[in-house]
Image (cartoon, one colour):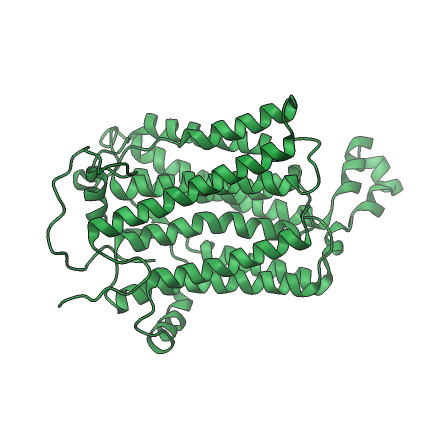
Amino acid sequence: MEAPYQGTRSHDPPAASAMKLGPTYLTTRALSGLAHYAYKPSGYTVLDRLHQPFWNYITDNWLPMWLAPNLITLIGLTALVLSYVTGWALLPEFAGNAPRWFYFSCAFAVFFYLHMDCLDGKQARRTKNSSPLGQLFDHGCDALAVHLILMNVACSLNLPIGWRMMTGCYCVMVPWILAHWEEYHTGTMVYGNGYMGVTEANYAVVLVHLITGIIAPFRWLYHPFAALARSSLASQLLPPAAADFLATVQLNDFAVVWISSMAASLLVQQVVRVFRLSGSPVLEHTTLPIKERGHKQLGKWRAAWHLLQLLSFFVLGGVLVTLPGFAPGQGRVAFATFGVAYAMQATKFIMAHMSKEPFSMTAWPLMLMAFQIATHRNPCLDPVIVGYSVNAVVVLGYLHYVISMVNEICAYLKIPCLTVRKVVD
């Protein structure tokens, strides 16, 4: 994670205005707000602090000075992309048995990404290349990484598309994007509660992949309470419906429940922190100092409106990925559409906070998802062609959005993206 921009520029940013610089995503006002962005993290855990000497040693002794911080992030993301593509090829329906090496490779990819994601900021400070672009690049890659990681976790837990998989995915995706919603309204990015945070969550994912590689994925389908549910004791103490439910509980259900309980705790804390601030008499209209407000939409009603927008997106995504009667492999395509759209909305939230601008959800991916749902339920068009077409448009639109924003920021701040900038002392 990179520190605020500290390099030198040939001129100061132009005065803030709402004028567009041609056909761009960012106004000059947004770019000016971004140039004065200050990063304020919080909630680091014991494990984060224990890793600091290790990360500092790697940065100081193993990373060459020519290696750009954003390139470190991109290399780490590439490992997740390769792992994700391999999972799609081996397990197009998520559930099933893949070679054991696949699960070990998934564990390595997450482990590698975790550490590369933590080395980039240290390399930025070491090479004096810290910038707001680095922070956006870091968190933007994280937004896509959430989807890539969760899809392979579903493979390791042998979870087909259904309520179990959706519950587990949402219990990670919702708190993650709400962390940026909280940062938008409070100015502080909270990574954990001091005991459980991002680092611990990544290590938990690594552990799941390693366990699957050792015991094989079919073990997650074991019903540990089946014998108890059919016993005479259960028939005396439990109603038939409860006994039948107990008999269907699988080992992977415990993993989903564990993830859900942690997510629920984080989510409640996030909502309480934001509304406690925005609902107070002093901070009714803002939760931030004047210099950090910019043109943000602040206050408890704006916070609630942002939550409602996110809720609509998750409901629509849930309907899309659980449509009945998908052709083989189409569930993957639908989930990829939803995952990339999620990364786009999260990146827009991150950008709105950093540039101190109003946030509104990008509507066109939601319209495309709604179109796919409508045509699937009333097949006037081939659902397979529609699914691939919607996915292609969403992916290309996301890439255009990200690449265009990066180019605009690089041009405005006069910094490179994937190479080291020479800073004049």
